[in-house]
Image (cartoon, rainbow, N blue to C red; front, top):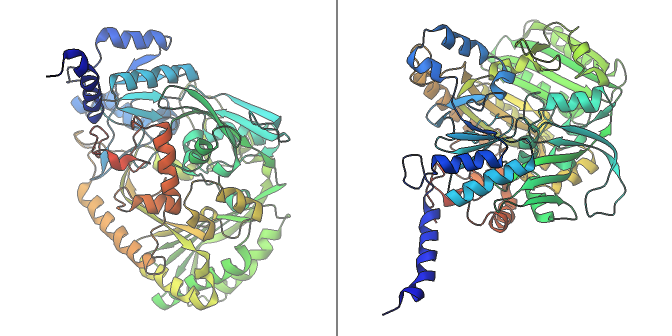
Length: 589
């Protein structure tokens, strides 16, 4: 028989294997003691929080004044972002419902993150990371977890000439941004104050680090490329508790993985440095709403706008959305950059004149608006305050003047999703021989659900430099060959299960989800490759590895294995998540 000494290594290994196969919850004996939590609190300078969701006020007293105040505040994305017990999306019917973490480290330094990561690894805890908290997939919340909350890490530093650590390249204009900053803060610093452009997200309250890790698209990505493609360097805390620098010269595999490999899987990003670009003189806007008076006219309208896009807009100057709706409605919400004054109007005049000359076929519901303005003013709080209806302001008494968000994004605050899906549409579909087939698919899809073509989120037509940089990211390569990302989604106003009078409408949600599924099936007839954008995708996507990352997934999996071999970091449909149960608590092998 083996002696006790000989058995010790085997017993230690067995205990380790057992420990990592199931993460602990508060009801488990292995859950950290109060004294151990106090030790973590001391290590992070007293910034350990017991998380309580404001929604708790409503569960027991749904008609109280406190509850009414919560529902009012849920319309404010800055309020949501400042609450560790909330996320921008409160759930997805039949997919997930927001649930607060047990504790949160309100990190202010990378060392706070290190302490949290080490504690979670040693105590076998489920870890969640929240910056902006905009995840549609529910990746920035989980019950019984330790939340690493980076909201207070929001420093911004603009550089005239940045050289990545360990590199010998010439310095380039750049901006370094801590993980908790949101894009409104960054745009104001870079564009308003310094007259440069940085490629970020369209929504002003999206977190910087999360967007970079998903790939990231903004209104002008058709010219400047993905946000991840502008990444020069990142500071990241990996699962072993090490603070690492990742760039093209130091930890280049990790650097590549951060650029589009999805947030929350490879480490906790604490700072990113992004190249900034020369700012165009002007940004422009074109909007209109047109209704077709018959099904035949709607088919023609779809084909006409696609042809017009191919001939006049399929280039680096144009971005944003062309939307087809089930009531035979075409909505145009496009933006431009780099065009001379009046040039955009000249491009569109012929299209709108043709519509106006066919009153039997088309009715103009919203008269075309075409304007341009100094690019430096786009995120200037003083300028935006003079444009009625464009932005909304954080209405809390102590809110700063820069806490602004686009009025068009207000419906996302506290939303509950009914369904969501996306697919990259290859540019080859715009060829003359295939365009009518695409138009027919869009017509069939729009009769089932609203389809929005985000032409700035397909990089075909971008300059070679942008395509080359985006090709050196982990994002699905299908984005490089796509002229647009088609998005279909449905949501309702803030709601939460168990709160009387405010429960999600499950019946309507399921009906909407089925309609979206049928509409997407029409688009897949012309785009059978299920390539999708990881941040704007179907929670229930079965072949998610291929859909989100295509041929890049095996390489991403290798990076995950190198820097997080024990799988400490888990998010739904994140790299390596197939090894764990759906809730991230049980190792499946």
